[in-house]
Image (cartoon, rainbow, N blue to C red; front, side, top):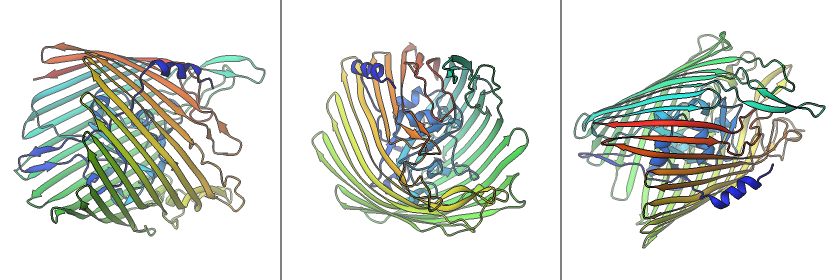
Length: 634
């Protein structure tokens, strides 16, 4: 791969990394609501949050694109805008929890989320919690967790945003956001519609060395969704929130690359429908707060108009947070869910109860030194989930305009087997054990805030070991799951940024880098040749370099992503070359009295790199996107 052009480009363009900003804290008379309830009990954790500029520019971007551009995580995308699974810190796709207002939206059948099917246009805030956090979030939070949120604004009046995108390969996106409020009640409505023909071209070379250009077929995407939210201050100490998120996705599953012109490109189709409802109530007392929620999630999938995969779950949770004294906070509670699956490959009349109890304590040991102790126990009817404790600590030193912080965490994590693992036809195994392991992490953060500039640097080192890792292997002419793998992961993550304002010019420079060593210690058999090798589709090296420049109402940014060499399912013989991608974004804002609008353009894969994320699945070359946004206020 030729990196000369991208590297030269970096010499002339500033590089930046997304900011780590504090979530808004809002006073509701005597009530205070924080954006991330778990953050205060994460003294030793690495939590990175989206900044307002990044969120304002999000249109048709999905969670997959956000992770690739703004984090050290890796996205395995099985074709353009197709099934996208995540890997944080060398773990698998089912080892990252995705939470919407505290509800884990991972599929109960597969155990993971399709990151291409999560539209960021609907949300206000995104937070990435790196590393194991089962003590706080439960099953799945081993490599990391992602939290999607909407934040009350309590503004008086009406506000609206209308957006339209048009791009290459039949790419159309339209979206609307409308907010109404009177300072005590507010309603938010967000809706979008996205269509993509996905008919990009790619090159193939046959055995004789002849080059041909193929147009991609049968890979269309059509997604739409709506999110409705109502927030109210029903008393001086009470806060009520009702949220509903409905999404529908249709995918023509992108076929593998052909080897010669005219070869059939047959594909299958998948229809997804997801309904997620959450009602939350918080009541604040003089020295504490009671939080409760009720939720309902229905995930429905139809494969090739014949095979139904559906799950329904009702969720209830209750917790109380008590300020014991000026230095100690205690939180305790529990949650329960009732699950009803309807899957063509399962036996009939399956139902399941799952419950959690948890406790968290935070103590200020000294003025700048805090420690958190968390523990969670999950009860499931089919196996034993281990108690998941964690101990973390953080220490801050402030001198003048600089803050130096240190953090450390020791965590036990787990993941319970999925419904597919236990009940898929004759292949499922109800006797599977939960995956379990531990992780340790050390980190350091430095921030200097000058009068017109800001510098931030962060470094983390971690070690993780997971046992009873579930793997499917062939036996008696059937593929079945077994608790056979033991995996060890260790690595370093570094990120930094520098920003400055000089009169009417603002710029930021920075980047992220991750070194990930994730190897198999014990395999699916005694003679497993993959032992000692890096896990499939887990790059050792990932880097992101950013740039942003703003002058008055003009803005320019560049995003560079490097993904290192990966290995396919056959980690010994199936090598997939790394790739370096560059995206360019530019735009201008215009004022119309109290209203304004913006025009924006993007050039994606600027250097027209030919690459594969998953072996034999084509990805597009250089392509374009134009956007227009209208913002109206009353």
